[in-house]
Length: 499
Image (cartoon, rainbow, N blue to C red; front, side, top):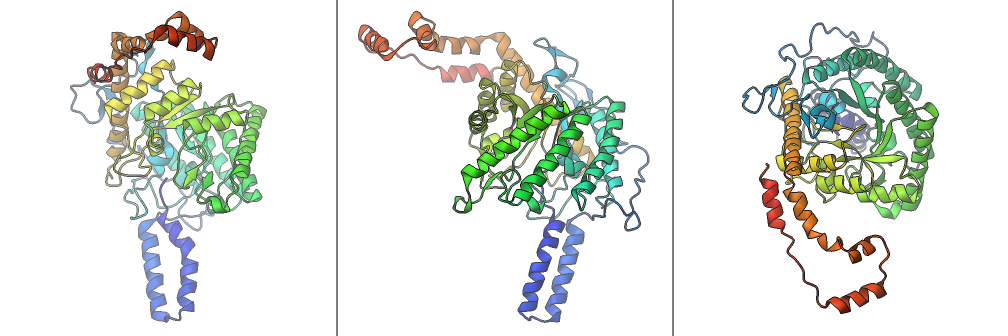
């Protein structure tokens, strides 16, 4: 998520202005302050205009021709290619372990990072000014972005896209106006994706950016906010269903707390469960057959988020009887923020029958926040694909590139290059994981490590038929156990042999 500097300045202007007047520092200081705020707002944030009211700003689409005229459809050219606008490892139609590469991955482009990311951060103004942007947040600008989105994913050669409701259509002054805006953009999206033969991997509601959600959405202390969030999810789920979406995601960025001193955590968790129960009921009511997904994250923007990691989320779902209604969307950067590897989170989700989708990104080990970088670590990609293969695939989920360009990457072609390297990294991971599985050495090492349980007494233990009295007798019969080596270094050697 990026910070809108212009919005931040606007919300703080009144309070700072009042302070200056109370301090009686004079008209000169006031004039200087107003000039500085105006300057930063103009430089630091794109302009906005109402979704309606073309007389107030230029609302015409006005874009003719291609959005990426210098980019051809990205093709597979093989590992020896030096062309940065080509795939070296991802060959969509190639079969690996009996399944086409495109079906192992089901790659998706994240609309918010790709078409709404500005490069802005808490310390600096936006750095990205794409040619098609007109500086507004009008309905027609939203439609223009949507057309750019489908040209992008078509040239990139992926089949899916993901969205937040407020990323694809401007927020209105009322819920009714916001819904009308969304309907108009979604109608265009439906037309474009039908023509391009693309699909929605998942949709979601943006329940974290608007000031009304400062205390949370489903866990807000304000009942009116809880209701507003429910209405927003209702609409977002309905448009996801209309677009043929295969999943719907809940990311609770503000479903948590900053301090327990002023928080009734038990009540908030109960409210969250009631909210998710209502979401399940609405899904069934409208005939939406997609998978509902929880996306764990430990913190940021809250100090503590309630769906901290995969294990915490699984426990929450079990406690409230929701385990059969939801799966998990594992984001690799969130995994590392919670103190785990992405592989750990995927395995935790998998063995609990909860692996539903993967947000393919990574963070920087030297930076302690959610940097949403494209994953380029071949070893990590290989471990990720071991989990996916063990899971039998990821469908109806997929790999969504919840990743953004670095602030300093500002060329249009960088959008393609970033996705290409992310796709190729995962493709290399799949090829490596397939080699490990076909070779069998690593699986055999693991089998041998646990072979003492492949005995009569081991089978009784695993079947729950060995009580302590039985085991006590066995210890006296066997004497001191002989403990074998775990062969970790050999396992690492085997793993490294395919990288």
